[in-house]
Length: 279
Image (cartoon, rainbow, N blue to C red; front, side, top):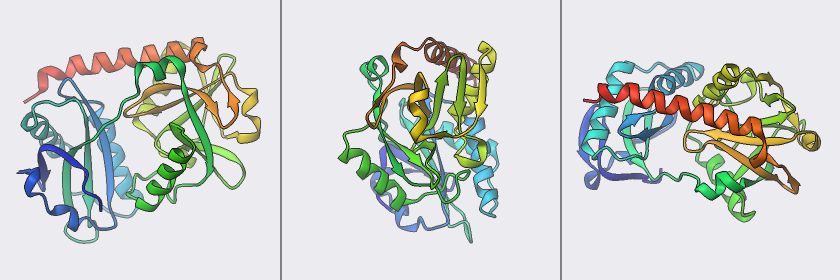
């Protein structure tokens, strides 16, 4: 597995170590599950939801994670503090679940969209691909390399995954929402990885009084929709201007703007509430 840890310190089985002495990558073996959590102002954003998803991923694969959420959160705060409260993403990995359960946690290089990308929207492509287990966040280097290569070859920001029936399920690293009138459409839970940000967007839509429908959108019918956006840990709500050669006025869509503003308000509220709990 490619070494991806950055900064000075990482966590290995509850202990803090220097990155320069890191050798545990060689011990990461299937089955492995992971989570990526964004740190803002020294706060691990929506950490409770991320850990719940991690436990569910393990259960879906028939495994059990022995570490409690309290224990993991203590390690997260230890890592954040040791590395000087850097506002980047943290990756949690549970590996070798068949036997000894290796636990790694470290900061990773993190890319966040530029202001211009929120203002102008981003280009996406479609590729025929499907996660083996959509609801479990499992390390799959082949899938990651394939989608990354396709995105780069086409000068795109993200790739929309198309199933065998021609329906868009999700992005390679994001969830997808389509807007028609005052209704938002997104893939049903059984077909996608249920992103933490996706769930927060669903809550924001409810608070704003917008109806959300969980249904798949066919790639041949995307012209019927007025706007598209993708969601994820690093991108929050990012308007999509292009899917292949189809253009959308997503950046000017009032509903997309309102949903993003509501989500950002919740992020700010969460951070302010958690700051006093830092140790």
